[in-house]
Image (cartoon, rainbow, N blue to C red; front, side, top):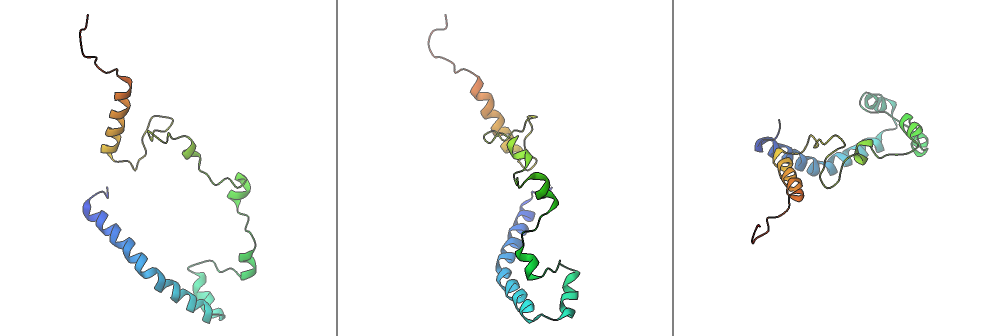
Amino acid sequence: MAKSLRSKWKRKMRAEKRKKNAPKELARLKTVLAKGKADVLMEDVKDIATVVTAEKAKEKPITETNAAEGDSSKMDTDAQRNKKSHLDQHGQYPVWMHQRQKKKLRNQRSKKGKPKNQKGLAW
């Protein structure tokens, strides 16, 4: 769903509002953190976010995914999709692609295989 003009406009305006309010939110967060060596404030924040001390934040965290993958941050699906035609190994287009785009790419693929009609005598 969510392909109507109204929903696109609303998403666009929400993004603009986030851009506009981002500096204010950052300034407010900095003032709260600058004030707050108080444990009461940190107790309130713990419900929303994970509170980490500065020493722990400077250390490089080892997560389960980094240890298992060996620092490979590329997804598996990117390597299995053709960059030009956007088809995956099963011949499927991505779910985000519009039907008109799919039709256009299909037509481009079918035109490549057909030879052009030669003008002139056909005997």
